[in-house]
Length: 221
Image (cartoon, rainbow, N blue to C red; front, side):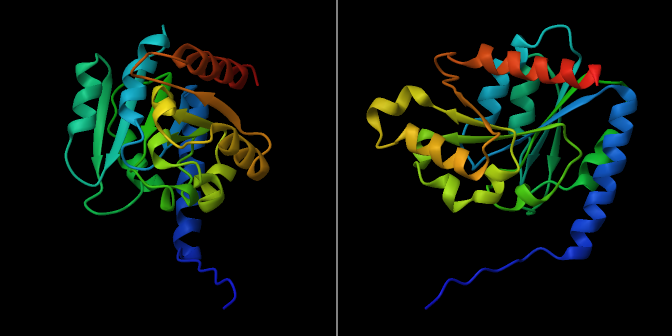
């Protein structure tokens, strides 16, 4: 049997999403608000990464918008770390959409220099929904296995950076990090790659510098 490819996303829905994302981006450009959308499978370490990353980004007013199917646990963790956070409960939806971000940001009473969007844990649906972001990060944790770039190419193709997390576990796992890097680059030659262990606080500074430099470059433009 030959290969069968299926497209499950309706074109009208995606067009509507693009229109709202465009409006969001125009608003944020006027406000000088830089936005980073973070994608990953469940448990890859998005919240833990943010807990360590945010203190390294000094002098920028920052908020995290957290998407989850249920519970406010991750937003609570960000708040306990000392940063503004709002939980978006999707009630079953496997991704965030631009209209959800619009509804939340319309209620904000303050202007932020930096917004992190912690998307719902999923490597499929979030890849096709533009949220008006400047940067898109994809996290891949070492326990997930090293076959993900070729299995989920859309996610890696649309990302500006691949962040390999939980690298402290590499000695204990059959994870070929060079294979992951090579396959990610084959899909997206421009993708930046960072190796992170949030538990050991390794690689966080390099990622923080990247975010700050990309924001500074965007402001100059």
